[in-house]
Image 1: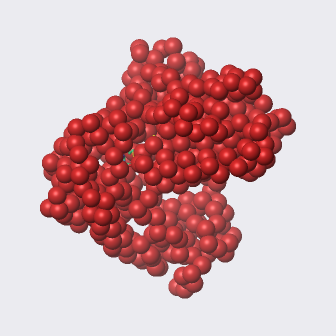
Image 2: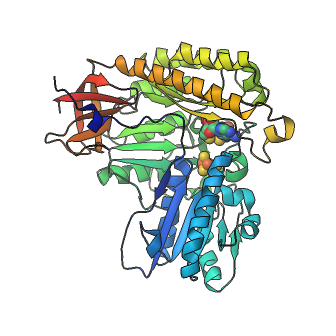
Image 3: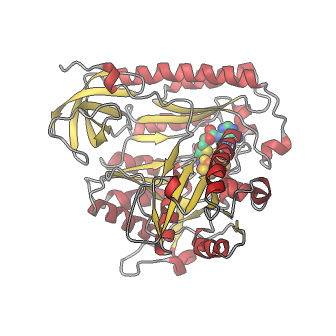
Length: 486
Ligand code: SAH
Ligand code: SF4
Ligand code: F3S
């Protein structure tokens, strides 16, 4: 057995926060002007920035990773919690300094905060020239021209149809092995705490044939994993009758109606060497058909992100999640029965939602205890203006209590992650190599089907390759092992 130097391979514990940021990478294709995009929030936003890059590329822009050298700076924003918006406002202050020295610099706000605040952003943040919501990116070339002509430009129109199905995204932060594909946009769920239905509009599903074509194209370019993305993938539905106009590839035999289980199968059938993941599932909508499809295909990963939000039925009702604690536990039982006891399961949680009592918080802890999630994203409730909760309920749990409860679930989750990872010791996992470990060039890292990060000595192995790794040690965030078979 190979002993590891822990300091070089231990990955950062990724608990508690989802707030990350991505920037465009340098891509020179001979275009005149340079675009820098900084993206915040969820994976959907990161995917949208790839669509934006593609639209802008056609309009004469190359992407850059250095904002100092950009002619245009876009910030693709998130509104999910107050802190996310504060981060963006701070960033705008920093860009203000650059604009003073370079007045011709164009600054645009894209995404959810643009949609939420619309014109108001122009008054509140003088540096902003352009405000564009998530469904208006096709209009960017016109809007940029308007700013070139000395005006301010705003388009926050929300569409019932836009899915950008025909735009092939410029892959921005890609390792060349794993990629994300948006399969739907918007959300119709109206969870009472959530701003997404207001910033992203109505739910709509993308043409399945354009999804399969994109996935096949990625596979042919060497990618080995795709994650199908949507706020609620289980309610994916597409029918030929409703979407005749938007169907892109008429050369194929097509099914008249496609639901999520069928879409998963279509993507899994592209090639058994292409792994398929998906996110996010909603406990009210995930079906046994989806679970059965997962069980039938080895290349559909054994991992489900199934946000519970709370373990208490009264709180779930106030949140308008439309399921109970018992329903949630029943879904977990179905997953374990159909997909397998070792299926990776993760969740999102909110602590201190309006009127949540100590006993109700304890129900969250006990739900966590009975499921033992592999991983969780955890948040203190942050009231968002305009949401049903902000209109109907009082945000009455004091901040210290929200934070204390958050810390309790973070601590419990760390314990469970460690327990779940310890169960993997001495097991052999098939791992798709994604690249070097974050901490050391002597180690490679990849993921198991259950979505756990595995680190092992690099040897002659390379990214994009599947290897079988025997797990020898673990932390609560990472498995460490050795390749036993490639
Ligand atoms: N569509 C996904 C998640 C979207 S937002 C789903 O339904 O699960 C990601 C997570 O942010 C949510 O699952 C929730 O846990 C958290 N979140 C959303 N609104 C929030 C708010 N107002 N305060 C704190 N956390 C919030
Ligand atoms: Fe928000 Fe609920 Fe829709 Fe998720 S399902 S995006 S939490 S409204
Ligand atoms: Fe944030 Fe919008 Fe995503 S609010 S989490 S970027 S859908």
